[in-house]
Length: 376
Image 1 (cartoon, rainbow, N blue to C red):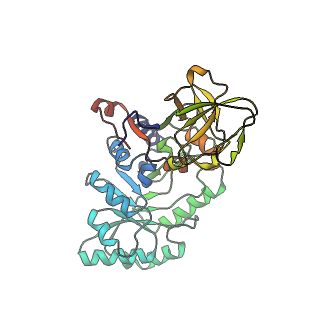
Image 2 (cartoon, rainbow, N blue to C red):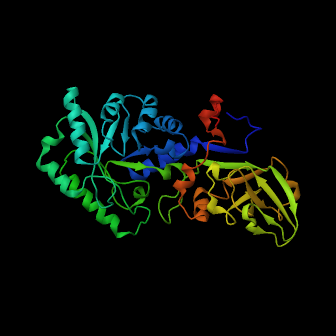
């Protein structure tokens, strides 16, 4: 746990923004329901924090990727809330999943066989979702296996199928023809399971101009990332503010950082902030990333190190430059998608890699009233 004065940077998490995003998505996809994807520790924000917040907004479906995540999260959920495990179950993990009452997403005939066998041994039905492969060729039952299930329904003995789902490959590209093809493939396979709720759309899919089946699984868009090319983001849920550790004047021609990959073409002021790739800040931002001081863009000068980044602050008024002065890395002038674009990656990677050395501050009306704060 860090005290305020020891932290090199503060990660602020806005629970009101998270709730507002959830409600906006619910309006967007109605009459479908919005489920929250909280894998990877709630996209780096904190799975339990996200979950308890969205429970108050009446979210009743949550998705994690791995059984270990479900085991950690399930105690925070009421009994009537569904927790799905997207990656299915490794052989031998079935009993642990049944013991906590999680719902595995079964992706193959062998997973179905093992889950059905456990239901038989326990003498009671076990809930499950079935994922079909509508064209992404990642996880899920291929069409021929769906046909086998339809022709041999006894394979599902003891399996209480709660959801039929698939996953879009190109949902972030609204004009991709494959979105239409996948929806058609999904509907064709889902018809083998009449009266079972359906889920195809993810964050990007929630903005496609068609119906959204029964459940939409939202991830990055909940947390303020852009879900689809050309669509505006919802409210930012995180902000990251570093603090200046040192300011120096560097002579013209001097090199900076490992490899001396940046050389000053004039006498320059260089500020160092105690954030680096160990804190999730991509090394690919070396010499091309930026931060903001009082709304003024300051470029990265040199390589991103494990624990520090150097900034060219020559053009910043000197009264703004002092040890402890705030430096915006994520905020009103730079979103997670802006950072991702500069790093040649996606906002998912930026968000999920934010490190544990930041002091975390939780903002939002209810949390402020309770005077609670999570430290990392």
